[in-house]
Length: 115
Length: 114
Image (cartoon, rainbow over all chains, first blue to last red; front, side, top):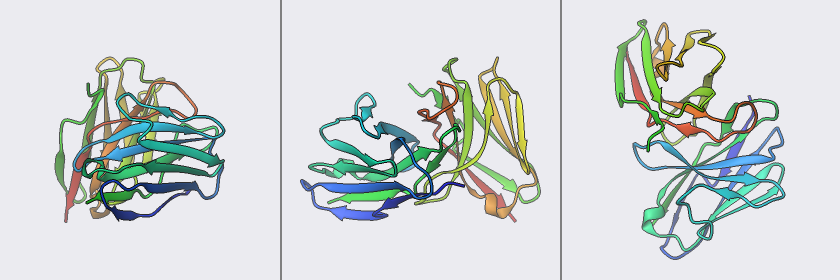
């Protein structure tokens, strides 16, 4: 199946700093990518839809100025958590669908810990 | 409002037996349903899906059943194997084919006992 990678796999940062997470589709092009967040023992919650060549669309309650999304190319989307706070500590996962299917392929996730 | 619900947080099944994971949804606009398997600190892996025009889809040991009138779907794994131990998420989409947003349930942790 299709492969989606994320980098870094885990990151620890200090409160107030910014962190960038990359999501890459390795063997296919993705005009759309999705960013999810998962808190411990909870469901995956969709944060935003990343669109290549246009602005991302954010789900209700997600601050677009805090979670900056840039879909730089057909194989790369980045999520930047700005001015991170401890409550932003979570597991961030991206996904991308291959064209012509309804199935999404997920990255391995990024564990963010804000101290 | 939890549109997709997995009411059993955990399930324990003996190896070789059938595992049945359940999922309920409230949004009647959902027309595509998927099951994902997830290991700790990894992204979900797609298992099987079903369109609302069907009531059953089978792939090897995995079968998904959809009851639209009850807004209920289930995943059957038979025979269950130790490697099936993981968290299983059901997900639903409301916009048909293509790149669509998924709404996930809370997950059910399946443990297969030898």
